[in-house]
Amino acid sequence: MRAKHVHFVGIGGAAASAAAEIAIAQGFKVSGCDADIRSSYLRNSSVPSDHLFNRHDVAHIDGVDVVAASPAAIERRSQIDEVQAANAAGLLMSWQEFVGTHLMDGSTRVCVAGTHGKTTTSSMLGHMLVQSGMEPTIIVGGIVKDWGRNSVVGSSNIFLIEADEYNNSYLHYKPNLSILNNVEYEHPEYFPDDASYFQSFRDYLGSLQFGATLIANGDDPGVRKVVDQCTEQLDANEVRVVWVLREGYSSIATLGNSSTVKWSARNLREGRMAVSVSGHIGHSSFEVNMIGEHNAQNAVMALCAAVSLGASSNTAASTMSNFAGVERRLEEIFADENVCIFDDYGHHPTEVETTLNSLRTAYPKHSIVAVIEPHMVSRMNQFGGKYVMATKSADKVIFTKTFMGREAGKQIPNILSIVDQIGKDKASYFDDFDTVANRIASLDLCQSVVVVFGAGNSPELTQKIIETRSINA
Image (cartoon, rainbow, N blue to C red; front, side):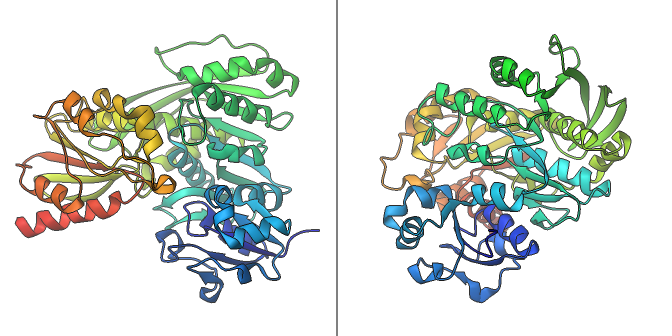
């Protein structure tokens, strides 16, 4: 029997809030709780205000059919009476399981998976489908500027979702079509080593529907590895693999039910890329209104998926010239004649390195200041040393206190050792945001780019930098 009333624990989350919107559109009664019910993801919420709570209470689950909780809340269920009671009553599932079981039922399931770039690629694909008149339903983990929200309610059977690997959450979706951007060890707080992380992606490929389509980044060694290890299973399930390859960068032997699409890109001017694509989807040339060749690649992956779903290649490609991007994904927050200030969600050294290299290409004559709010102890313990190479393209690097998140109480990693390895003439550490902002205000920022990285409280830091600069101007 289909559930009628769903209660979300952690409803203010980036994607859980979107799932709540889709649930309402599909006729569910929705309530939810979150420590921050003023979350930006709830600013346009359709959930009635008297159904949103900023505390946990067992009374919240009275009369509900399903309690859809964040993986973090489920992990801490022994500490949350509301979640513990739901579990005892047989009502508890993750919000991802709720989406896969209830919201996606009967849909053409479209997923975007991979370690990096999921939100941007999902948003690009969603933009292409919406602009092509294909009426998809969409859940992404960020605010898409063209929509002003992180969800779209559509009238077709296409259901697009950003598929996160944390907690193996994406195994609930069982896609008919999936993009696989890249695979690189991440989430050490859940996956103890890279072997378990890669096994998760092999399990994900095993969850593809019979006859599904896989859009695979053939330039990424992690993707090639997991696809190669799953070849027998993919063939048995008649999964069609579309390899996306950068022209002159790599090649791959296509066997059986597979094909290739090749692409190239060049910088036009600050913030725009010219992209050319050729292959079974035809020949297209278009512009991407975003910085970085990685975003050109994201657009090509999205284009292949859109065409596989029935969109016109030329129509879908042309929509990238007016794609406004996603909040917190290398988002320009402030600019004047001297400095551009960007806010970026990057919280893995590879993401930081890719963004800084892209900024160096886009702004070759500018000084680049990277401000980094490290994210979670386990990630810093595992990957912190990689920041030495990741920040090579920056002229100045400023670290601030680590955002602890669900690892509150753990010993804070020694960031000063990373500062020493980078060099104290280039790198520094300040524990509080005010000091960081004052330090940046003291720099000569003529013809400069400042980019603030983080997935925790870094937006607050970005605003403080702008405000402090204005005061001291």
